Image (cartoon, rainbow, N blue to C red; front, side, top):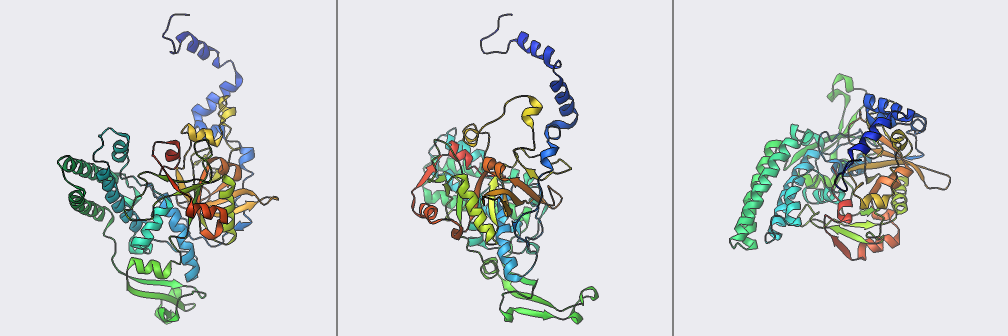
Length: 483
């Protein structure tokens, strides 16, 4: 064997591996399958995949049409709004309702721009190549966020129905808008740092920031349209609608098109209302009434601790982001309690793990026994959840909504029914089925109302000291925003 640098690959060894590879029948079969159909299709185990069904004993019957975030990272907002719309659908007694995600997107971007520049002011004395400043400039105007951010938007800015501020080209594909927002943020950040270096105090910097935020508002208005300040609400409601009769209008068949004359229709009419008034009157959900539970096992991530990720808050003056770290069983118990009460809840997970998204025969399964990667490659890929978090192998990448659960004889979850936001044509009619084992391995978060959390965890949520972690720690990375 020829001389080579210690630690380098010896060509002779690599050549030996190459020459003997095809002598193994399994290697030949795997090579031919993967080179012709790619990894997921070749690794799928059809025997186990067909055992998963979209039938659940505990499931909400009225969930609304599946929404579609298109080519944007708004999953967290869609998931939160899907939870909120359930309360509105129940109030109005309707089978479907959708809030404007474009409206929420506008204010999320505006708030991110503003608070991002606040962080720039806070770190103005640090070097450009410090971890803090590099992180702020490198991840400044992305689409990812958290459930509390959606609640902050509802609390401060309100909500509007989707038809009041519909989707635009820039919500359906946010990349081009985001590129310009990032350019504007970078320019503004460098200007603030220059002013700080010249001796400007915080008051002077914030005064300069006002004009920068106005520029951001202009860009957003061009890309998304101006958000409505007031609008007229006129929406059909069901017979069990719980709105005051004075706000309802009976529309007889004579007043309607011929195709709709079979029965009178009741309309909720409220003219000239603001987005905040709409949320207060017709979205019976308390945006402060939630607990965010995460499960991050590991020696450096003790259960029973409340964490806050530095620079994660995206609204100045909003409710700060915090997460209570608990065993995964606590996540399951809280979600099951919510679903038993007929209340959907947000969940987050590492959706790309063991997920053959585009497998045609059954594309909506998240399970640990349907994709045989180890058998395909002949290598050991096993890792437990704590090790995967330590190695940066897994983190929450996608938020969706739990709508159902199947329980076993021991009353523990067997599988979950999950509402996605990729449209009705994705996965299984827009839904996914996740095995309990998969969620315990790759599911890292649920957000539920306080009433579904046991007293001991509520005490921790309310009273435990909040531990601030830097974004580059394993805790910070595990809590990183999702897309």
